[in-house]
Structure formats: C-alpha cells, structure tokens
Amino acid sequence: MNWLFDFFGNGDNWSGSDGIPMRLLEHIEFSVVALLLAMVIAIPLGLLIGHKRRGAVLVVVTANAARALPTLGLVVLIVLLVGVGTTWPVLIPLVALAIPPILVNTYEGIRGVDEDLRDSAYGMGLRGGQVLMKVLVPVALPLILLGLRIAAIQVVATATVAAYVGLGGLGRYIIDGLATKDFPSTIGGAVLVAVLALVVQLGFSLLQRVLVSPGVSRRAKVR
Image 1: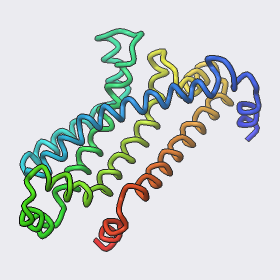
Image 2 (image 1 turned 120 degrees about the horizontal axis):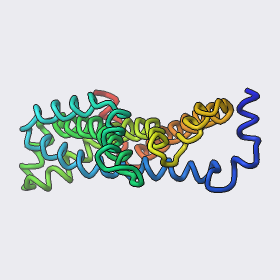
Image 3 (image 1 turned 45 degrees about the vertical axis):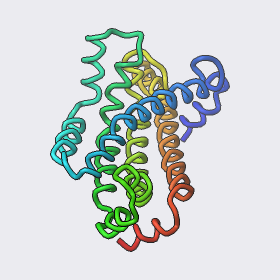
Image 4 (image 1 turned 90 degrees about the vertical axis):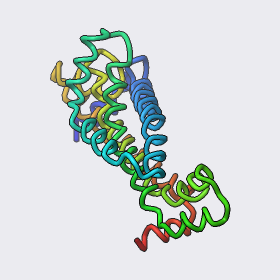
C-alpha cells in the first residue's frame, strides 16, 4: 500500500510527457484505434455471414487462428519486419486480439434471431438488407455489444505491450519499473490498467442500457 502512495503521491508522476495523464491518453489512443480497426473488419463480416448463414467455418477458423497468435511474439516479429518508430507493431497484434470476440458474437447474434421474426419481416415486404439492419441487428445488438466489450477489455489490458517497442502508454510504468526495480511505478501502472479496464466495462454496460431497447433486453434475459 505504501508503494501506491509513493507512486500516486509523487507530483512528478502527474506532469510532463511521462506523467500519468499523458501515458493514459497514449494508452487510450492505442486501444481505441485497435478496437475501431477490428470493428471495421469483424462487424461487417459477422453480419454478412450470419445473415447469409454461410461461412460458419470461416468464422471458427479465423477466430481460433487469431486467438492462437502470441501477442508479444507477434509484436517482436512485426518490429523485425517494419522496424520501430511506428505504431503498427502494436496495433496489428491488438487488432488480431480484438477480432475473434467481435466476429463470433456478431455472427452468433445475427444467426440466432428467431425464424419467425425473419419470416415476418420478409412477409412485410422488406428486402435482405432492410431485414438485416431493421430487424436482425436490433435483436442481435446485446450480443454484438458483448463482443465489443470483451474485445475492448482485452485490448486495454494487452496494450501494455507497446512499452516493449519503445512506445508509450501505461505499460511504460510496468516495463520501466521492472527494469529499474522501481516497484511503486510497476504496481501503480498495473493498478491504472486495471482501473481503466473497469471503466471500460462500466462504459459498455451503460452503452447497452442506452442502445438496446427494453423489449430486446427482456427477450435476451428470458432466453
């Protein structure tokens, strides 16, 4: 506990390019960019495959392959290929980490919509794209948001690897602290990452309350 007071009570840790606010912003930047890139790839693919009900093998293979990738090993490999001085060695592994939960949950959410709802939508004269966006997506939204929440928490927790390639973020406190045996810095950085992950968890819970209609929420609980 004294180490936490030493870290958070030190005024030098709250100012400058190496201060907590700047490192926090860097960490959030890595996480947000990686999550957005993963969403651009995984959500359209999950919607398409779930709606067409073809390509389930692709979902499984893609998800399992991405999960099997060692994040730190991939960081080192990309550094060897493209060098340092760019954020790609960090973003690519984080995107690969975020894609599986988003892709799988989007696919399962769309695929799991009741057949009666699909048939009713088509019976009302809606076409394929209209059925997807107006009927299937709203019903599948809780599962889609769950995938995004899981991905976001994983990315926030793993973005500390940026410090391994000389970039910023909260991982700097952990990696540099271990290297110099500055344990207050190491523990303080770990606490900041954990708190940020909890904030992300809370944020997505609130987002689900806002975006998901009460009827869909009740339906999901009953199921």
